[in-house]
Amino acid sequence: MAKYEIIGGNPLNGQVVISGAKNAVVGILPATLLVQGKCRIENVPNISDVRILLDILRSMNAQFEWVDHSTLEIDTTGVKSCEPDSSLVTKLRASYYLMGALLGRFGKAHVALPGGCNFASRPIDQHIKGFLALGADVDETDEYIELSAGADGLQGARISLDVVSVGATINIMLAATLMPGQTIIENAAKEPHIVDLANFLNTMGARITGAGTDTVKIRGVKALKGGTYTVIPDQIEAGTYMAAAVATGGDVLVQNVIPKHLECITTRLREMGAKITEFDDSIRVQREGSLRRITVKTMPYPGFPTDMQAQICVCMSLANGISRLTESVYETRFFGYCSELESMGANIQINGKTASITGTDKLFGTTVRANDLRAGAALVIAGLAAEGTTYVENIHYVERGYERLIEKLTALGAQIRRIED
Ligand code: EPZ
Image: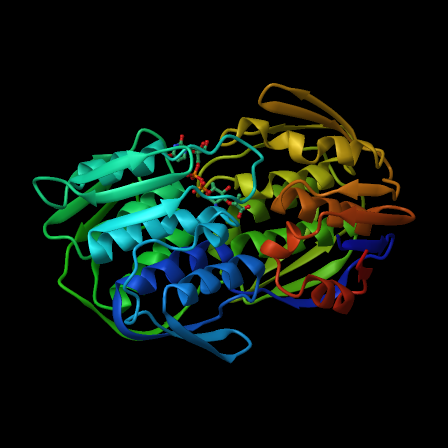
């Protein structure tokens, strides 16, 4: 298995360009199944989650090509099957979006249960609730989900989610886009990638309003046509580099961002003492002096993202005093990385949903293991900030969500290389 070797202690300085948003693209690629014709999608990150989804679509007879390093042209007209390859589907979490897209296109779907990061129990009961409300029959086993049109057919419906769920919001949008009637999703998730998917679908001819609010309305249309769409920048990749600049004491201009999407992260890093300057499509992060302790609670957007929990924890472990970090989305997320950080010298006490982090002067390099995507990113940040050499194992998790990580960090002055075992 490959690992990163990181020689820590170098402040990150310079510029980094953020790639397209993973959590938007993993919804947009399944959405191309709803389109009759060719879609040209720009600012697509070339990461393993994207490559696996493209492998799944190709195995279903979709045609695609990379026009350049970040532009895809994809045509799913030739797809006839509603049963994607389960050996591929189980490789990532977002494959469950194929359920909504195939139900929306064919009126049926047979999709293996997803894989991906297992830092918490990740039920899909709200997705199922949506499919049932739309008139689907659902056969759920511990291996797959089978969807088909119920006796009364498929029809738009009003669905009130019991939990704010990104995945369920996206899956219901995909299922409802071509369905007759109007669908209303109440208590919908408001993340930027929800809005991006709605904008993609509307560019192709859908009629979706309210994305980004807690009520999304989808008026079913008969067909979508091909077109061109540019994916938004990745909010969490940007936040990860911002946290790395703070943790290493650097000065980084993070380019190709939407500052509004980063407001919750910017606010917290400023509270810690970072100097942050916002421009139209970039943000400069400078660490000046020591870091102050802060209190953070993760929340659905526009709150502080749960996907930044591990990264801000590294900054807290280097701040003066005791910081408090409360997780409100995935209770067990701390266990993906806190013991690894402690092996580097961090002082973290977990008590239920809240971790107390007592800051220390420095972390020390050692061998650590990534247990999920964002945990791995946090351990890379810790290695960059630590004294000595850190080996991060299980980096396939990290490479699921961070495009050209070595190249981008090296350009910022990091001493990091990938070692194949
Ligand atoms: C998406 O996961 C993201 N993944 C996650 O990012 C992110 O952490 C999460 O949203 C929250 O922002 C992708 O977009 C591919 P949820 P998702 O449904 O959709 C509960 C990363 O690092 N819930 O919003 O699975 C659930 O248990 C990944 O890029 C139900 O109870 O998250 C959780 O407590 C990791 N029933 C809460 O809702 C359901 O049917 C939020 O989950 C669905 C969810």
